[in-house]
Length: 284
Image (cartoon, rainbow, N blue to C red; front, side, top):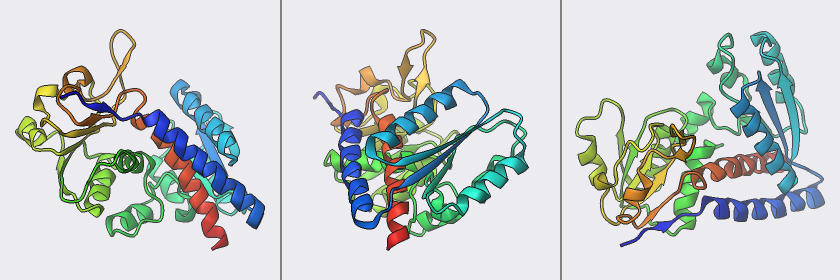
C-alpha cells in the first residue's frame, strides 16, 4: 500500500478561488467588501512573514486588509485601545492579532478584547464555548482546515475512530470537538497519556499536533489510516518536518498530509473564509 498525499496547497488554492467569487458577489450585490485587520506587535521575523502571507492572500481574493504594525514597546493599553477602535469600525469584519505577543502584554486579555463577532481566529472564550456546544460562530482556522482537508479528500469521518495527539487550545482541543461534531469517536492524547503508541495504533484518523519533530514513527500507525500532520518543525539541517515520520508512514497509510504543503496553506484559507462569513453576517 502506498498512501495518497493530500495536497493542501491545491485544496487551499481552490478554496481561495471560490472565496474570490463570493467576495465579488458581496461587492456587486451589496456594496460590501470584506475587511480584515491584522495587528502585528514587534519584530518577530516569523510573525512578519505570516502577516505578509495573510496580506497577500487577502489581496488575491479581494479582501481589504488593514495592517497595523506596532513597535515592540507598545503598551497593553495602547493595543487594547486599537482593538476597541477596530471593534467599532464598520469596514472591518475580522480582527487578527498575530501571536506571540511581547512578554509584557497579557495575551488572554488581548484575545478577550476582540469582539466575538470579529474574532476570525476563533480564540475568544465565547466562540470556543459555542464550538463546544456545537453551534460555532467562527471556527479556529487550523482545526477547521484539518476538517476541510478530510472533507475535500472524501474521507468519511462519521463512525471512525479519530485520535488527536496534542491538547492545545489552538489546535488539539478544537479539532477534537470538530471531529466529535462530525460523529467521530474521539480519543484526545497528550504528554501524560500512557501507552501512546497503542492509542495511535487504533486510529482510523490521526491528527498530530504536538510540535515535536517526527515524534510519531510510521510503525505506530494503523495500516490504512488517514494522517493529518499539523506539526511544523525545523530539523538541525534547516529543513522542515512534521510530527509524524512521513517517509515511514507513507507506505502504510491511505492518505497523509505533507509538511510543508499540507495543513499550513489551509490555515490562511480558512482565515479568509471566516472573514467573508463575518462580512456576510453584516448583511443578513
